[in-house]
Figure 1 (cartoon, one colour):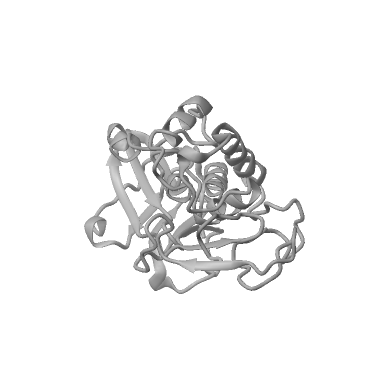
Figure 2: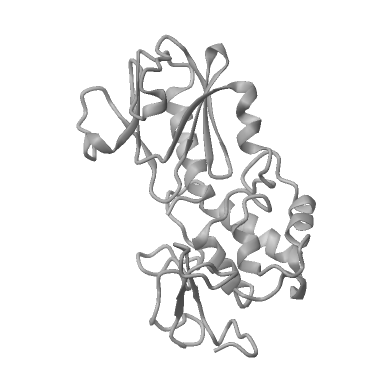
Length: 268
């Protein structure tokens, strides 16, 4: 599940491969931009912003993509076999040295550089970005004291980057019931600080480790571990489907937590 650290690493890899390269061929496999062609333009840089990725080109053009649930970028050498079916490719950028393929990207759009703000203006500080401001993140986090901690952590206008995995892991590490009120947090600044530290720890690895143990199957405290014993107390990890703030089963996200390490009076 792509989150801010995934997008950060993808941007780094694309930037190292493509920055300074001339686009020899471009293929946009989405209806809105199917006839677009930016071949001949030079890639200037690839930068992340939260879960958004911006590939900036000469002439003031930007390719904006978003991974959503399962999008990703792959890099291939010319002639190398792709690791996936061609019908899942949404955009293909070809230079002399590389072929960059955006797989299953639900958001692909060409825009003018000055229009990037339309996408990013609502976003909160990015824990992995140059714009990081812990004080502003704290202000946004605590702006609505009645909101659940889970909902606030998922809100990209609070902090840009954390997603469902980090939400569950952060709540566990801070001993917070996911449905607790932001206004009841004893130390919201520590939650902000931990968010930044976790994303920074994982931004260059391509893996997500919150336990400090990178062995396969040992990386996470609660996420994806329904029914398995808590690594701290042995209590079976629980899972609830739906929106963590409303309990709606219509939401695709799921919540994992330890009922012993993250107790909540009055809720089973």
